[in-house]
Length: 455
Image 1 (cartoon, helix red, strand yellow):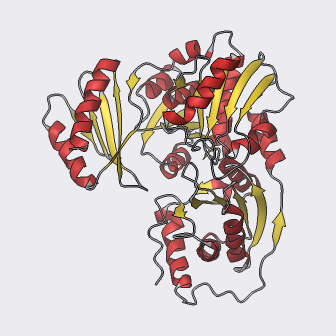
Image 2 (cartoon, one colour):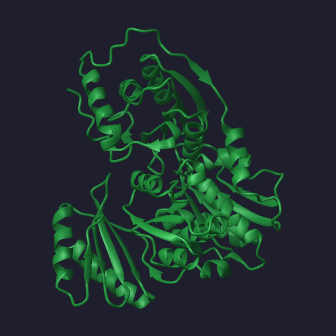
Image 3 (cartoon, one colour):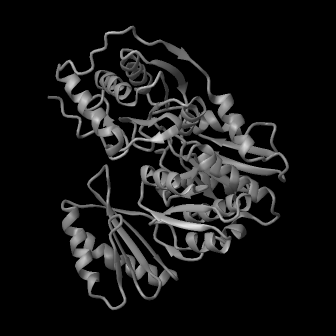
């Protein structure tokens, strides 16, 4: 039997082209997806990677072979696909490997209304059916007529919808450098932040190129922000925005070229959403700064902590009716956007705040950055569980230390410092995040934990 275990991850599909993911596999996954989600039609979009059109077409053939229609949106960002799924109320599939290198591709799938699919809610069944079909079993036979494929441009509707949610027409003029990293931000930013707004957009790497000739489309790595930071300083821009490959995440850089932590953006956007709906609930994952729940409470909201990952964030938002959710990785979720993540909408909130205030972004961001953070530090390890156990043992008996295992291992210390170490869902890595009341205490704790992890 075909084994797709290497490409089916906790929340999506991700593989190397063509070694572990090709058109035949995409076609089988498309048929299995259609069988599991049902309905009448599926919306499909893809990013700019060279392999994406072929994979998206093959997936669509699998879907139509099950009698479902396909609305083929063509080039789009992941949040454009979520818009299509929500607006059209149909399941969706986005072909992208996000920030991964060019040899990768993958599939982000959702049910109607951009509702997430995880292993427990359908992904495992999709894998099982696809594996059996690839092994020659007749598990996806369909006797009825095939579905049809209709091409539809969702970009104008996506742009219009976002601009209804955040009105930028009355802000002061801003110069904005945008680094699209040759990813899908080069497709969506001109449509959303167009000439009708008081924004001077300075484009950087807007050419769609899935080989990423300038730098990897992963703004989480500081090395990939260098060009943006330099251009901000050269042009005297008010703000910089960096999107990842599929443009569902947005990183913010201030007028000095300094990165604004995603936790600060989470707190800033939460404050804006709480102005709209006082007393609402805001979700944050357990790796965001402790400043986030503090500020949410100060603004009259109710913070709710959850595990890392979009499936957990979206499920908790649905359970609580939360208006907004944010993660340390610059994923931002909005109830008004079908609880899906959209970096573009978060960026628009930041632009509105900056454009409604005479202060520079660095001064505004100070209000939302209260602690010293390490950022996410990755360590490649052979025995992740063994290293986690060693860290737990080192801190379990420490005076005043509390241990939380909601997601990985979170240890809080009496001086207000804390750290979380957790295994990657997709790579042989341990991910460490550390926060302290000041840079000195944070650095000392960071180095202590890293010495154990990397022993």
